[in-house]
Image 1 (cartoon, rainbow, N blue to C red):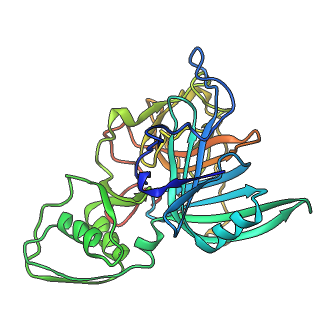
Image 2 (cartoon, rainbow, N blue to C red; image 1 turned 180 degrees about the vertical axis):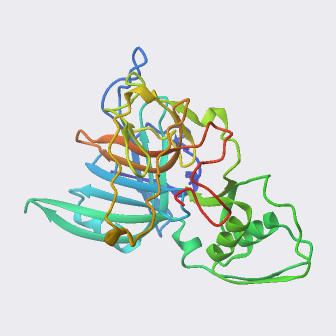
Image 3 (tube, helix red, strand yellow; image 1 turned 90 degrees about the horizontal axis):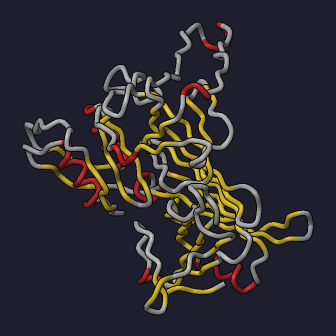
Length: 350
């Protein structure tokens, strides 16, 4: 285990410098990519403390689960570190406040999570191994534990509201992207913003058929009708990392691949529809459904391109687990509106 000066860490990018040269990626089990096949897991696990240093615990056994969705909810990471010494454990429990996790394979290695630590506790496994469990969230301080108090002048647009919420709230946040296609209409009179930032982001989203989420500490706002860039569409085959058989579920197309940091929320994944394993739709009884019509959540895309609705990265640096699980939804191509969105009051899940 080692420490790193946090002034050299950019939480929004993967920066690897050490002693004027390059940081060696924290863990590497095998060689590099051979004949298009993925070999050589790589990872780095940093925990920043209040002393402005980051503890690099990558050499120890670490397991992690990172969950992300496109619903505006904070991403959550559960990290378990095995057999830390007592002094380091005490330091993390007392001083640790930020977690940065990078993982993948050569060529697709990168940041998969960065966020604030909200809970740390110590347990024993099988009565022998000690493990430190760390729970961290991305964006919770901005979305849930925050407020804004300001006045918007007459003539402001929805984009102005988003930018003000990000920059003027007590806990500020960097903007990664705001769609250029938001409504250009202007406020006829001044507007007071007082309350939680997420409430105003929700209002902008409902009025613009848009959605927002926080990715690695940065705010992104897009419209459902925005075209997904071609470089955000990742082709998955058994040769490029696809694991098992994609499944048709009520939530969407479930796709599992070897851990891939390039798969991001609201990006696209292209697969061969002919290999998707279909399942029967679960139809509840009238008593269970309250007499309501059961909506069909999954739509096949004619080209096999599915927008990423949720992601679960899971890994064990000393075990077999090293996967990315995705729920994807069809949207009639990269430029089409998701079929599940009927009006501005709905999101992609209806």
